[in-house]
Length: 222
View 1 (cartoon, rainbow, N blue to C red):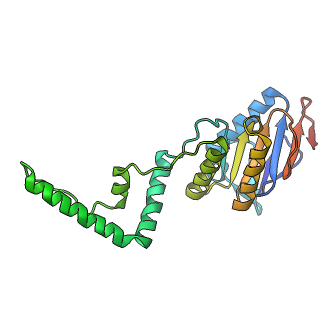
View 2: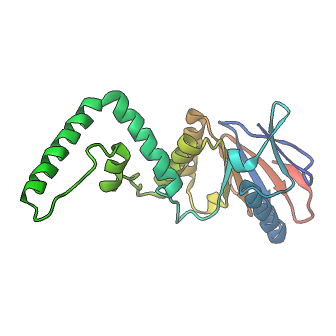
């Protein structure tokens, strides 16, 4: 994939194993680019253009911008619904007999309750696996460290929303170099793309391609 913007002379090559780092030294311009990119990932118009094989790709379908690293949610409704469908497919493919035995046990349990109840009961004999998941509050388990949370967040977006490119705002201010390198390795191994937007130049790491927009708005490839 390629990413272009009308303000930039160069086009960014967006590939797994290649981490683009765009450093914008002007605070005002940095904020403007982040706002614009966020708006486009939310489906609005803007001057960033993501493409592949001469075809324009909507950023809202293929990319995500992450700026708040302390409220990464993986159990939103849009993910839960897809998780349940995925688990149901696994259950029907590999564990259908176990599920049928559970249904039989529940039917026997409700029949006994009905026999002892002061009023007659009715119930769904087979309410489906999804109802079972909801009843037991099945959800994705949160990780502990920020790196683990980021990787989980990325995996969920890749698996359920087919997100291919992840933009991070000032990620280098919150992740130390060893964790950044670990994140870069995961991106290369698992085929997703990373693009960092930074306000301050920092140590260049293996796999990074750094572009600096200085305060005079000159473009420098470091």
